[in-house]
Length: 402
Length: 144
Image (cartoon, rainbow over all chains, first blue to last red):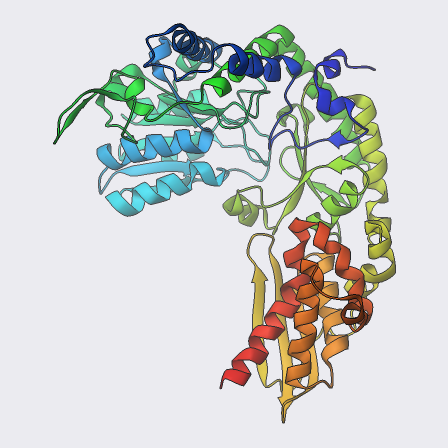
């Protein structure tokens, strides 16, 4: 079956490369690169400060991107969107600005064992500096977080729960809405790492109950170097700036400054306006495809991929054996073969997958493995690619001497 | 050499049937070498008497390149003086960095097959793990 979206992705038309590393970064359609080029060629100027036409247009495009991002994730107000470089920076912003200033000894920060290092190390830092204690949610073998586990770890001592929406290794979708309910009942806030969910499913931060929500542009067809942190307006207003300097002030004297209104007080320095223009175009593209189509395509391809892998007795698939619970992410190992060797020989066959610890070493330890191989799909992948991939996977053990 | 050929002709044999992957009796030096980012792990054991590597072995786990490279290294350094082992390590590192001459690379015998790893930045540290560990051990000895 052909996939007409591929026509929009020049890199996919270059050769026969099977790109199955979409959870690391997605490819960019022409519409995105053209939007960035259009910005560069028609209104490149420093946004926010200019009193001339180009700068005003640059500002308009940048702010349009903010509205688009707000609408995409269901924020009540576009001022609740702070642009950052990526999810990692978004979570760091929350950790440095909220965590260090509002958490204290005796408080507890709840994270899960599945977190990407981006949603673990900032909280380790907050814990070290404030004395707040890190508490870990332990999943079941298939990655599920049970109600009992949530109720036993999220308590009145909890001040913040930092949780990945979708695990970048297991592909499991965490019960974020239920986590937020329990957290809020206990007076805690919830930060959701949306890096792996935003590209694949409709998100509404208000319905989810997320107080903070972080995501990256480059995993959802956008350019690298633009991401966002959503936070409820009251929180952003209370939080001190993360970085300080240009473009985030109201008035500066020799000794002090008053800060600009939200969200600008969190966007020090010249911003990534062409990246924001690219992100806008990416959001429009995703909306045109529609999350229903994205989900349907991914589920169909994942089912085919997992069925093929499950037929090979020497392959272990991590997480749920139900392909509907993978969000396009299939992490596996081939018995006797180190994932790095697997990825290298597949590379020589023009297959791009990820191998290693996937920036989730505590989860690797939980799974009892040093590293794993990961194939991650997106809506522009095809059944033909899945079949070709499975054919090559079936030869890997032979190539590695078995 | 094409990568799959490299595995088939050299790496697989040394990875799946290594000659030197075992514990040594009476080693005079033992050192653990690790690549934290990929989990390659080598426990290198040397028996050095009068400046000569009398015996060598390793244990460990990791990718085929790291394990095979360590096995091939031991083939090369057995019976060699400390200075000679360091010189071979220098050549191996030079080969990976693309600075060693053809004549030098020939001295590396089978290990010379790994020269194309230079084009695979992600695998370089796997190939040099054993050599790096050995160099650290011998240099420490010479520093004493």
